[in-house]
Length: 195
Image (cartoon, rainbow, N blue to C red; front, side, top):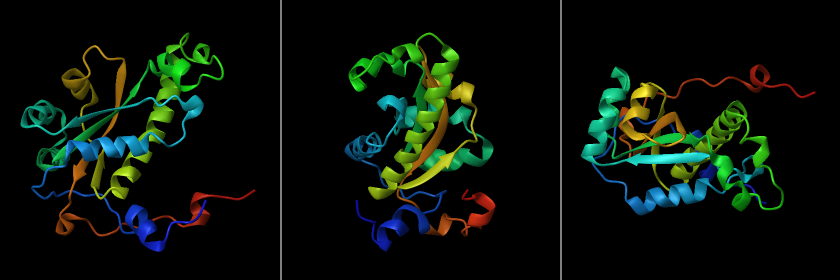
């Protein structure tokens, strides 16, 4: 495996920032599908793939989402051409015979909701990180958010599904003038140790 060129590292990390303002330009459904198709290639435990996504792109969908948004995230979410509701499936284990056929591992999860939730949340969050990187790699700007009412989002979008909401991410083509100055990052010595 070879390294990414500097331009690729800039696109994904160093020059990429959270976006708060959006061009009036739709994100094609085909591109949203490409993002998820790329993100799902990242590793998860037993290939369980618990990430589930609802893409909110229509005025009707935005109207359902609107009451759940915090004051600071409301207007930018309503203006974004797409908002991804990133969820994890508590019954991901139902797919394990297909996704991990080399061994029967359903029993690790289907007898304990706590075990299923812990693994779904951990691996679903991992996949959501892949999702953000995939979106950037395919030319989209991202605005991940945790400022919303989780119960209201679930009531509006998840009825009858064994999913839980993790976080939301606005997607589209950002307005550079709406990006905040780059905030500091901690140095290696304050984040890690090598033992």
